[in-house]
Image 1 (cartoon, rainbow, N blue to C red):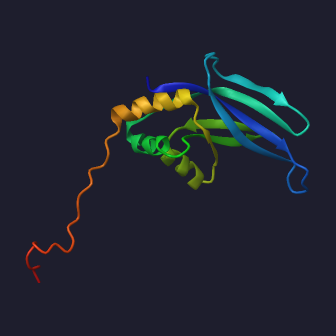
Image 2 (spheres, rainbow, N blue to C red; image 1 turned 45 degrees about the vertical axis):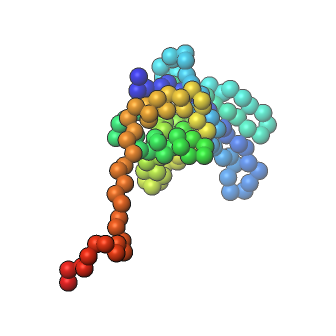
Length: 155
């Protein structure tokens, strides 16, 4: 199984600032087990200072050509799920979700909004199975320098 269904939680923080009235950021990703397709966003929390919205489901997909980036993510001090999001009228909406460092870097390089959030254990286990199956470390070649037994160098 190379797909995992997730829902994204985005938070809107109300600011008392003359330059901006609000700040949006992804605050979490959770497994989506209900199987709803194209569900409208739901407000799941609100108080005077902030609101949280649940979006989803989104499909996390794994690809063999990204396995090096998955390995980097999984072996980092805090593995992440990366979410690309865009403003749509007055609401921040997630567009795509990935576990690849490389894909997240490409999004940021192209000027997109991308937040990384801690990876839930269920996703880490699923990704770990994929990486253990497909990841092959690059072969390291020993470089010979200053070898006294190498003989004279051609001029």
